Image 1 (cartoon, rainbow, N blue to C red):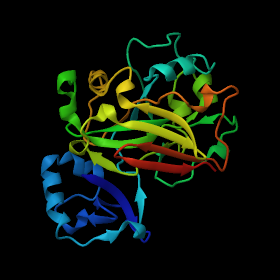
Image 2 (cartoon, one colour):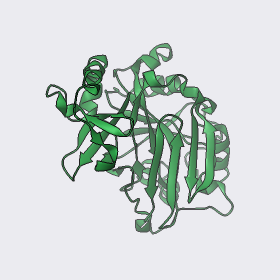
Image 3 (cartoon, rainbow, N blue to C red):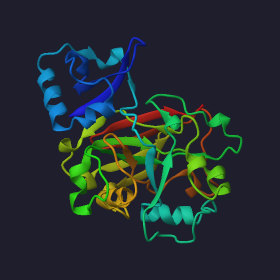
Length: 291
């Protein structure tokens, strides 16, 4: 099922099921919540009620609504650094990695992005506010947690996956290097576009086969499949939940492949006017312009 958070005619945010070129508002069932994280917490029971609406509830053309980031998690957006082999190598050789000397980490490199960095599909990303002019793009697969928990075993991790979305893990590289960690450089305002949809796990036959591509001004920069992750989704969920109490609706951005701006000589950082498009099979395309 393809779920979305949307606004109609500038109104309050609502959630719905995307069916073709229309959206079915879940507000047609007054017992369903109006926020996606709360809906995700209902699990299969919520999805069953949503399916019951598809054939009977009023619909709105997608052209009449503004699609927002699909979910606002309870915890910060959790992210993984250096999780594709070729990207780990390009990052290590870029001069911007001040965190550790290992090219390929022994354990997942986990950091978070502040919730205030969230941005909607189509929102402008304010790279002009970066005085270092070192803003970079990072297209990533986002995993949305369903059933939360701690100490989740790898063998059971997919039981905790509700679905998937797209994240652009934008970074101010100079701040990332200067502060010798990732949080500040990753958490600038508007530097976490997400969406356009949340696609439930039962709609994805093989998440490892999904292809991720990032284009800047139409030029293909990143192109990889999810199975090329160094640490796969079960390992990430297990590692994070060793300490963090995962909650329904939490988002894990699984890492970015090679082809980011720092991988070029000289680096190809974002400039106002640049158009970023991150596409993943079955999940759609997340589009934002730098301003």
